[in-house]
Length: 387
Image 1 (cartoon, rainbow, N blue to C red):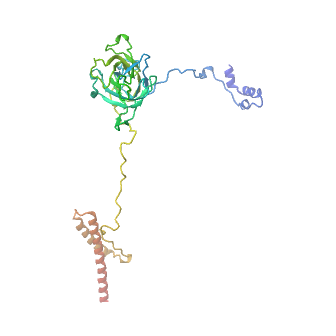
Image 2 (cartoon, rainbow, N blue to C red):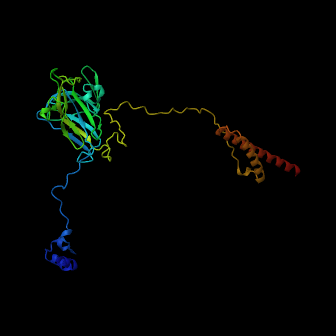
Image 3 (spheres, rainbow, N blue to C red):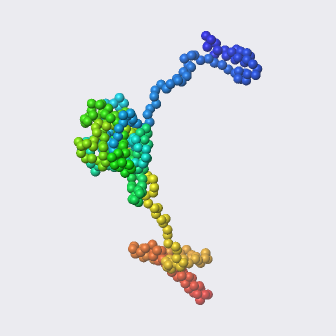
């Protein structure tokens, strides 16, 4: 009832508001109308916490845990894998992903040299065979110690060593991992180049077996995972160059990679579960180099003009006549028919070039104009004779 009274007769309420407040209150003195709404019509204030977590971005960084019992050696070989379609809680997480960067962990805090190899598929039959792998990254950098990640450089570099030899290194390029349970293998190693003791390598860190009973066995657990891919345990490598005898004393298994990956969740967006590569519409281009690949070409130039003309003009001059010299109608028709006959004779030569045709036409015009003047002179003499 009160709500209906306010809406039907607002004037008494407006006057009460304006009269019962201080004259200096400009806010209430400016009231000219009032209306009421039901409680259900009032919007709720925002909640203190979001109602749902925000969606994840396309670009992700996946940090793999640092094992407090971490050990290390020259390198590690392991693989990553995407989930199988239809077997994940989120059905849009089984497509191809694109790895755009990576890091590793080392206890070293000085200069080191690293090599990163990769291949599609499992690694078991290709251990110690770098020719069957792609060298996807190499370089010299400074290790950041066991508490931080050491970044694999993403650009090509060239370093001149103490002997004056130039060493060219390869920056990390994006690598795809096909969707629907496909694999990609990695072999990461630190060389002996900056090792201070031949018996003590610069170590890349990896974790002990997740399941203690698996020590020495070829049973590999998932080290860490995201909705888009999983990182599996692999094998620690205790020497460099890469030993080919997998059953020899230079391998420890299983061992877990410690590091991080940057990756793109949906490189073929808006195709979320596309499992192939390349994307149907995507063109893979090379990343620009840090330095130009060559010197710029010289700008084009033209030859300077000659001081003297090379040839005489090709067209005959056109003779200008005065209006008084124009022929009368009969003579004009006679000369026009003669000009047409001359022009037709000229056009019969179909192989003549345009310049020659124009020259012939100009000569014909000049000829009949001269004939016309001669004709007028003859007529004038005849008139004088008969007069």
